[in-house]
Length: 264
Image (cartoon, rainbow, N blue to C red; front, side, top):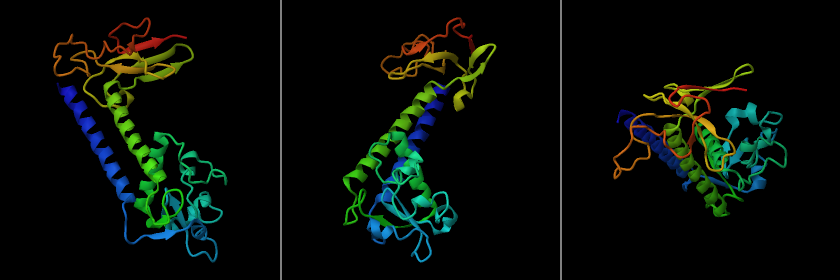
């Protein structure tokens, strides 16, 4: 029961982290009485050029004063293209062309939206929030648009997907792996393989995930009840997760070996 308790602790921490991030996210978009409302043409004047009133950028419609990081955003600097506009998409894609420095994030994936949320947290922490820019994410009344609501939903789903991925990783930690031109591939398990600390080692197995083109090596618990065992089914064969239907042994590798070789 000790390993199941530790897994529960990890999942509890993951859930708490996700909730905290979601709370910060919602807090970023909550109405504030002291914000200023820009139109895009007005924001474009804040590019840090001589005579400009300041150096601002916008992310998901939120405007920040980045004057304290002038060397990064002033004309000629590496990130100068972000100044005076909302270029949310480029924070993820790295496309700093005029065609890439735009605010359209409608086709980004869950993980890409989480990257965008990380940037939003960075600016909230390191720069002064000034206001909002009207357009894609905020209306002329300063209130969120349906596109901002969609972006928020994507980030929330991304957090949920991350939580599920962490849960899966605790159940099936990735193997250690190395490749040699003379011996081929070697997979092995340890109490820290895959970056997952635990009190069991496990054995290598191929895990087939729905939709994945290729299986990948994971470490599988060999004793105790299955991770998915329900309380109303207390009987088990003391084989851990070895009987999981998506697992397959490596050909030529002893079933309980902690190291497997896949020759060339």
